[in-house]
Image (tube, rainbow, N blue to C red; front, side, top):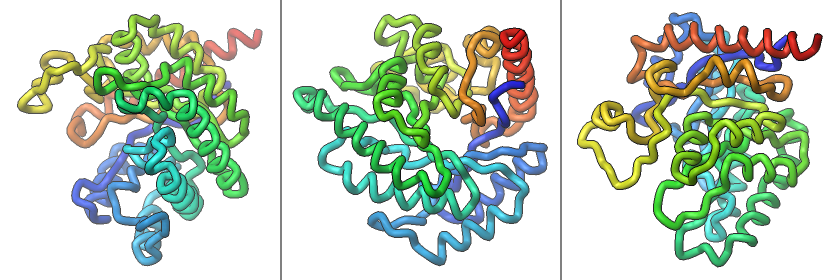
Length: 304
């Protein structure tokens, strides 16, 4: 049996209010989706590391209206390498762990860290800072049964320090805590591999043994560079950047990847394909479920 237990889509508020999140959730429920990753930081649930009680209660009430399995995406700006904000980020992440517990979500996504070009001298300390922060957060998350999923991100400015996907896997191994897993974002890995001249498939293969969460969305692995499309759709037309397209619109060989890689038990294959592609979401959902079946067959064959 495959270690991938579910697939679904991310959902978020588009105006900071619960109503728009609820509309997104209703559309996904009507589509037959059973698993959702909540972008809870699109809502004002936490202030200075403290949970806003009434707003958190409203979120709990909203999530109970649906029969979803939930995961949670933490701060999109999360960066445990940053010396100026690391403490604040840990406090916010701990509050997010508590939010996870209240809505029965057992995965909290944390982005891998980075340094600005003028901070490169701090690289060794930054790697250690991130590992120590992850360990502190994991210890906090342990009694809640929440796993922190460390996501690979791509370089967004010249001279920036980012860990490669394989290095993210090494960070997870170094932390060596049951409540910290790697999160493979396949498109991010593709883009970073192109930018650095790395082998994309080798990079994600290095992450797979410690990966307990996945982000699926399609692209062509072309770094954004200095190109700025006037409309978002112009990036899509050029095939440039982190496009978050429906599965099959880019050139990632999903079938081959899922027939080759194995992941940790309890992994969720979450599609970050938003409401912009509502018309295409059902087809991507069907495709993702087929990928789960492909991965299941691969694991069954390997066990024989």
